[in-house]
Image (cartoon, rainbow, N blue to C red):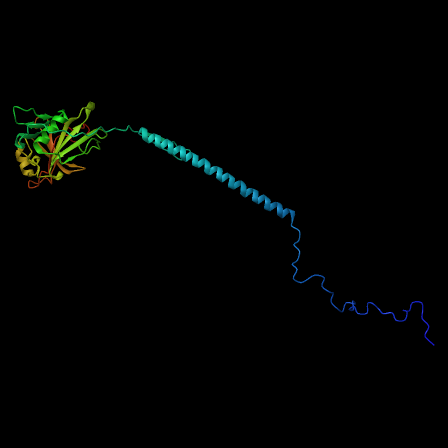
Length: 308
């Protein structure tokens, strides 16, 4: 006799569908719902942090734009300054730009245009060197047929006679702006034409080229030139001793002085008026020292050795 079934008993042949599941009582671990290799999800960003980053980017962009605009302004100012400087240079003016808050200064100098330096042709007759004498006012010609070559003689005549007598010049500087080296006032036009140790000095007053001065100096070289034998009216030559200088001009005043360019120089002055007659460099003041050069008084009135 079979057992009687209660109302909640399973029917015969019934199988529990959950019999194979693991015990979920807590003794066994829960099954993983995702693969371990899946990266964790990024938490949502903070709105405050995002706003801060955007703000910083905007500030950086503003600084970059400001710097670019500033560079453009400085470039434009530099171009304007360059243009102004170029124009000023062409006009003979120079401008010094001072820092902000200080006063800028502008110096204006007049540009001196040099004329063409045409050669002077020889002018006959040739004059023997022994008839040419170095004097205070120029070159004495011991001849009744020719007039002296004094200051203001046209350059074509003076240089023409020198070239015919001494040969072709050793050097011709052409017209140049004087620095004061040759006794011409700085800024004036001068032209130096040299024949061995003899240098003829020309100037251009009223646009007329004239003979203005000379310097005889063994330091110039070219001592094989006939001009080496030029002497003063009293017979002094460059290369003679200081003793000869003192003896030759015993009736005049001979003194010695320091010169910034030539060191020691002699000065020959009239015993009557004390006017400067001749001057030039010497080795020293001892009688055995040599007279290196004989110069005419300088044309520039502000020179320490200006002509009377």
